[in-house]
Length: 422
Image 1 (cartoon, rainbow, N blue to C red):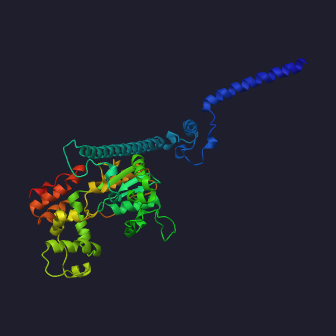
Image 2 (cartoon, helix red, strand yellow; image 1 turned 180 degrees about the vertical axis):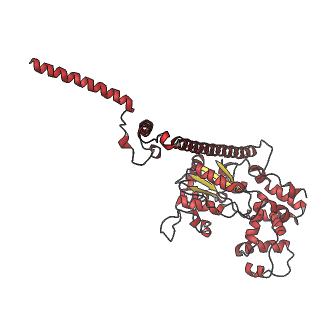
């Protein structure tokens, strides 16, 4: 019996000593990582948002411990002897550390540049939005048609430019001649509303979407179509989406946009615009004797086409406004997108298209899904204004500015004194 008690006592003492040694050894190695099995191989904990937060902490601890062990092992077994290598080990080490330091500095500099750029972009957006708020509230004394009307008072036909993407909670108001083809392509990709004949699946690359298809009115869900789908609930649903969705538009210098519209629609043989507008301009203001050619192709072949001055006279003619609302390609942006009734979260500019597009896709949290398609810059530039307006009487130029003055002021474009004071 005495022998048995002695053995049991020795076993207990041995267990205590072993436990003590384990505790000491635990402290030396930094602890056991209990979450190691939760981390997929070859994948950083930062890459998987579903990993436990504690896994991140233990992973950091494990990384630090592993580094210390590696350094220790390398120092004791693989570092060359300075005397045998003629000091090469120290020299290489210094060079390596210097290069690593340079890379770290470059990384920090890149990060700081990115942060600085984001800050500037955010400040610019706030200025653009504040300018619209001030204009619409009448603080600067500006007055223009429909400034104070409520959203409910906007006729349904004037809501056809507000494209809705419910899947990503986005509302885009498109403005013709302001990169709207490419932005519509982006919206097609996000909404998956068009099937590619090649793959039989929705388009994933905006550049692959045929530009002639994106202007098909049936392709996009707009506010103007809500009445057909939702009836009496339409306005309530619109207001909910306006509150919850991210809303954006892109704008452009108003006079440059007019020049671009004229070049695009009347500088080439466009049958629809020739019959509906071009022939009307020439009959009213062109002193045309006899009948005009029936088709644009025939007219252009004979050298008969509207001039820019006839186009401006058409815009300023009160008869034009009485006959019908301005065509969307020269209708003012404030009448297309209703910035006093719709509080836009992002106002982009064609003049800063690339940087604004990048910032916007990040804001929409779709930059991992779609990229804005790059394209050659539009040839119509602000520097062309003097040449295009040189033959327009100064009184007409000033009337035209009054017609588009709300767009100039709402979106922060300077008064074109070079055109108006000549």
